[in-house]
Length: 180
Image 1 (tube, helix red, strand yellow):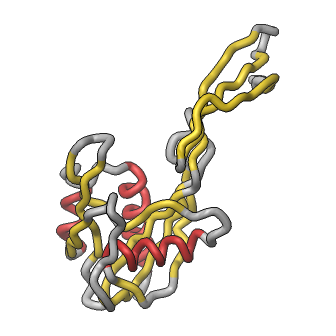
Image 2 (cartoon, rainbow, N blue to C red):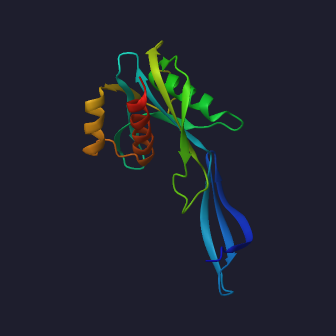
Image 3 (tube, one colour):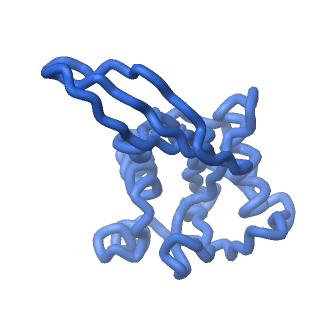
């Protein structure tokens, strides 16, 4: 299969965290086609387990599904920010927990059909609560602590539905099973 050639690209709309772009492509066989992409900043996910072995999650409202979701802390990687530092910052802001080294779990493209951004995933094992969460005006979270059996059930029963959360938690659970 031959990769299409981008002939032209233009911005259609720009917002603080995304840009909508239109691309004219030359496709296999010589025809042209126009596609849309969404340029997004990179994201991070901070999977955390406290010193008592409880998994630290947040419950929050997500506008896309207009419902409450259960997921690890996470958010935007600011321009120039190290993804591990961003994950630690998000963990502290959303949960009030910190104190463990960020163990990389890899990264994924959240939706390569539409965007090229990445979601960096980290595991913080042995965190402690050091303060109350400090949320922005657009963010209202509640901290939820689950033991491993409860977390496994939440994943199997689709109580955790955010795809990036499922991937990050699955990777962290796999790694945690190998740790002393």
